[in-house]
Image (cartoon, rainbow, N blue to C red; front, top):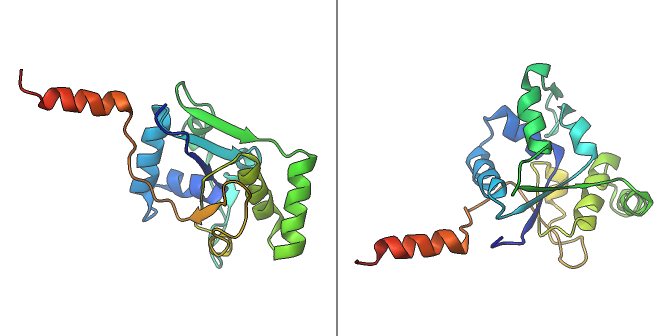
Length: 173
């Protein structure tokens, strides 16, 4: 694997991807393409598996439920085929206590706090979300690394094999 970059997707990011009409959808597709070939590790909380079915991503928006007809699409995101790597962070005591601290110190909603503490537990570099309250916390939380919280943004990563293959094709025989 070329990149060990670990990207956290919260429930909003999964939902926005599945809806397919989000302005950042091309970035989500690019990241998933790199994920499927093993160039990036996707991380999320186990909570996301249930929460993605019924979530409100922006203030004033109506909660949306994904229909059972989308089950295959949803399952493919949480049951990847190798070399894709998905890290599901379990809600253990340490992660829950870290979430509780975010609630007390930052006034964050409980589920959002679980996502933040899960991203830190998962040693993520990036946290993708459309939640405006979480976006305000970019580079203010985390340990090593400091968590960069952004709307989904991704430039395709190439493996060294792909780069060498392109160079070889350009070489005159």
